[in-house]
Image 1 (tube, one colour):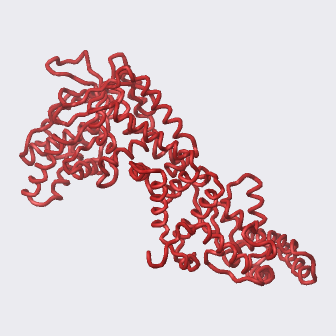
Image 2 (cartoon, rainbow, N blue to C red; image 1 turned 90 degrees about the vertical axis):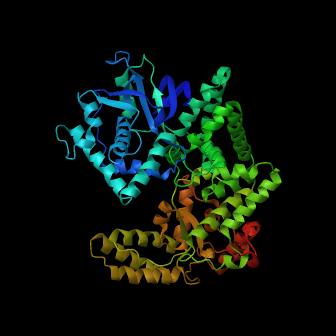
Image 3 (cartoon, rainbow, N blue to C red; image 1 turned 135 degrees about the vertical axis):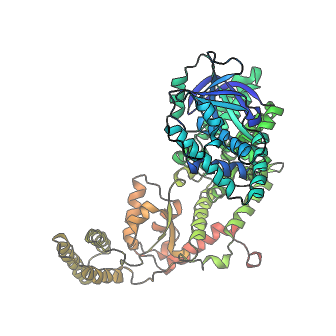
Length: 584
């Protein structure tokens, strides 16, 4: 039996009040569907038809919801012998489903056709045409609608032909017919009689944003809420507001506001997905209505208990947010690929201390690095692991200070590994790049103090910059001069790709610092930080020489003592998460 739900729902963020929602198999759809003149005609092509067939086939007979249709009962219908519905949205899907069932019935001699009929207002003989489309094997070019219907019908034939000979096609037809009548569902909204159809159609088709599973869950939930309807609706809105708080959303979803709005137009969907996946994980890519299909039985059985589980998850998230240690651990794991549902299941029925220990185990298993391996990780071969380890270093630094790591400023950016001191200037091949590089490194040289050697190199830089300004600069001249500059600025250190020479930096900032020596980078980092740009705390610490003892500091180079001190600090901060060699 289908469920009839009366609730306030939202279509593309525009309310349809007192809408009636039914969740029906094709076997339950009856009546005559009228496609009005304000709609365009049938326009699905071969690709859309094939994708629909593949999606239904891949469902394997398990509950699978198609995108919603919106209808309105026609009181002025020409025929009173059966209900007639104005099909406001969804005519492409209903027409294609009709054609599929028609093909199975007439071409493969299996089962019955669609239990409903279609009539296009602009095509007076459309009902007859659809009922006899199997009799015409030539494309009907009387009008563009019939032409596209023939193309779609042919695409259905091609799909069945891909299954093999006649016996194989008939077997596929039997299975698909069963899926369509028993498990594939159509979500149908019945608009109230006082809603004007044309404005509603316009709203539904601006942007073509489909209904979300969360909107359908809300409609089903509120339908049985009775006196608690306003209370639940208010609580729903409060959860939505909390999840729009940047710090909360970033740590629990691993998304910034822009990506969050794209993936989760309704933020509470994150919680609903987690609950659904705890009941039944998607067996393949997540279907659009997997969450709705999975949660609907629980809502029907006991809506109050279901809603209590949503409130409990929301309270749990807020509780985690209040504790920097747990917040930081969950935020790191989410940022590196773990889902909210796994945390809620992990925390179920255990003490806080046991939950934290479980989080530690997951972090340890994720980075999977021993104390001995740490120093051997290489920028060229272990880039992804180094990115995660340096993120963990920053997160753990915040935890040790009793602070929340700023995930809201971290997620949504592209991150890269920054070499702390210069590698070379070979990647620069344009005159404007040479000029910028020379000017910034000239400042670094001048910061070292005056000497005959410095003065001579300073004068040479001025001369080359002047040549570049009048178009006489050359790559060879720049290369020789850059080697002299790097030789002087890097005279007590060698370039390398290991963790003691790497820090985390956003890709945008990395591009502005690339191929610069330590002193130039230090000045740029300080400038970014003072301007309020987000620089990860450990990256800032590196360039401020935070890790190096006062007796070993010289501010303009990244030397061997700096590398040793930095590596020691990394090991100390990450000790809880480094595994012994025997555990690997």
